[in-house]
Length: 244
Image (tube, rainbow, N blue to C red; front, top):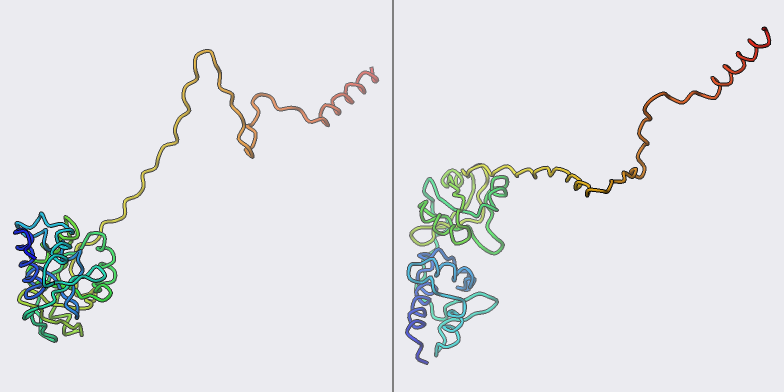
């Protein structure tokens, strides 16, 4: 089936991304050659001239091409006829420094625990800062840049895999080999002042009721005399009169 020109151009781009150079777009394919549709979409809309792409455009390319060129299953897409993909080079020695930009919400966890790849995935580490920041902006407008002492981590036992021309892959990087800004201290909740009661309406008065369980306020003025004192005083007066 002949696709509209816009979708035909998109199909060619998908064939290049998924079938030849996913690394150029910061994508890492799984063992079966698939990648999450959400990640693919984020990569495309951040490329100049492709910001118009929506999910339904991808669905149309997958469903309308004849013969089919792509397959979608469980929110993942793969190329059915891939060409030579970027080689993985396990055990390749990394440069002294690598970079990754993460969302601010992950800063506290990484500051405490180091970098851990997501379940079933890998960390994508860039040779250049600007590349790392570009990828990080797909997930957050102002990502936090992490500098990785890659060679020192490799000597301590961390495993790196070369990927394409600009990246390395890893499963974890211990905290001592990471440089990143300290996470901000959690903001204290401002104390809210107890609201004052509204002023009384002219011609009315406010009835102050005691709070349940509260102690009664102390009495002002002269304290009441104990009964024994009054009795003793009366007895003294009586004796005085009898003596007279």
